[in-house]
Image 1 (cartoon, rainbow, N blue to C red):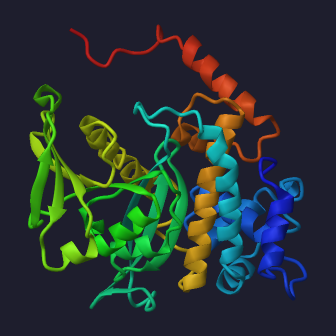
Image 2 (image 1 turned 180 degrees about the vertical axis):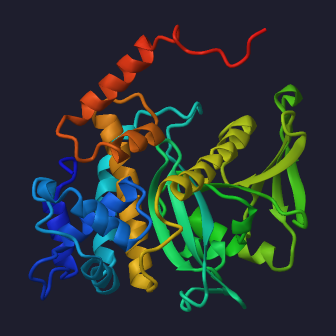
Length: 378
């Protein structure tokens, strides 16, 4: 917790009046309890209460003002504004991004690359009636944009499952000169033209029924996998009005997957192979979704209200970014998964964090397998 800024957290609490009419269990206590649940894979409020009670003599030293009761934590998750923790997560994101600024994507670009997508988290409709998705099914959707260099989320919007992915574009504040990579679910030419007017370069896949007319073709090196590099104009009765200027259409064949991809972009200066490589960066957000669903508590929730769900998700995001900050500031070579696993078993150890990973490396180097029994003998 020393890697967190208590002053920034206090400002977030004051901004939304989070500690109003509170005598004991403050917003900081709530955040510590929820962060403990994320770091140690707790499954319920009872889990949190029992495990923290087992270390009651150490709670004061880790920042908690007293014992944590599940009813108190449940009330805090239900009533305290989730925007306190969303705002604090954004302050951590602003701290983490400069630490990963020197990460190389392997592309000859000076611009920042962002990947945009959405993921669905299934819920029980009878317990979460506000999160209607299907007739008998509930769900929430996380509209997310991450920085491809660092896999740090820079934008997250939580909605019910019926909201289409493309509506996430309406809430973005794009960075001029950056590249935004999306799948073809975001092909909405009115919104793409808005991005173009905001001086944002986009890369997306074209739909099969795209109506266009070729205006110019550039020579390409077919041995690189690029099949065509064209300047096109849209000819559809609606699309030609919504996007009235030329687009770049790049066709790429992947030998590894034996698939043909057609990309659309509004950037005419980068190499056609770079366009294909940029779209490959979109895989970073798929890995991000897979990681947080597997290693954070954002699929099973401690409360059923929208406020409780958003509080738990944003504290999970804050913990993810905190681990990324620790990795860089301590110069750790281990993956985020390894760091999270080691911390989950040593949160109350009275030793420096760095020593945990020094011992981990030493054990890996000095492991002796001479006494290991042989499973198969021939």
